[in-house]
Length: 89
Image (cartoon, rainbow, N blue to C red; front, side):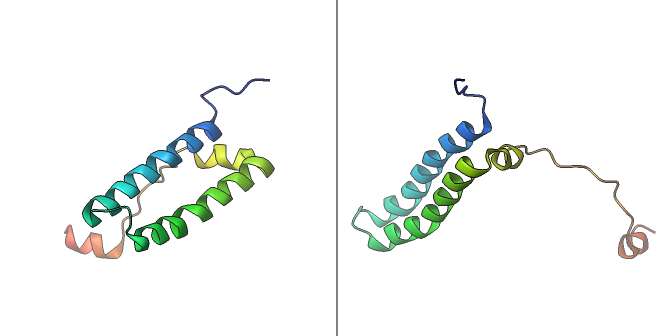
């Protein structure tokens, strides 16, 4: 059973390096050097836990990654609050 590029796990895994490149660009271009150790610490503490969580769920519960990649929110009927009913007259 081959892995198609439409699988959510693959889409989530492929967006991770893109985010890493963007964060690295935003940190190291203003610093003017890759020798900005605080930037490396920030990237490590920000991305390593996310990568470890992704690897864990990819192995143990890939359906959770699929559910998290579905960006459709359930639209609920808006309720009129007391404050909005006063301001709208």
